Length: 170
Image (tube, rainbow, N blue to C red):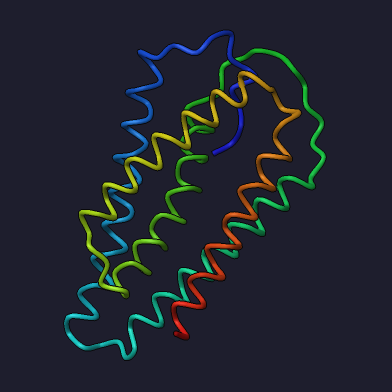
């Protein structure tokens, strides 16, 4: 999620909460779609060593996300501080970019035969927390905090990727 809170005049919880829930629902739909595809493949024995493949895929996803965040942190965009409405099309593109990674995470989780309900609960909770934190961080610290937040996220993703690789080989 992009840090766009700096462009808000104020944060309205009556809008933020339904927005977070809608984004969580979208993430769950994409996650379930990916999970269902690979879970069915595993159940029909179409994939060998599915668990290790799932951990490897999860590591690749984490590393790709980390590279994307580092790129965004190092990129020096000219920031024009003005308040204007973002188009619905722009919001949809942001949501779809995140949903593609969620679809990939669902594919990896299906290969690992992870508990779908636990994963859905985690997806909902993490979506709500991350979106809220992004909005409040952007609102409080503005665009100046963006590179720092992206680097912190990238480091966490790299650690998660290394943990996934270790799980695949242990």
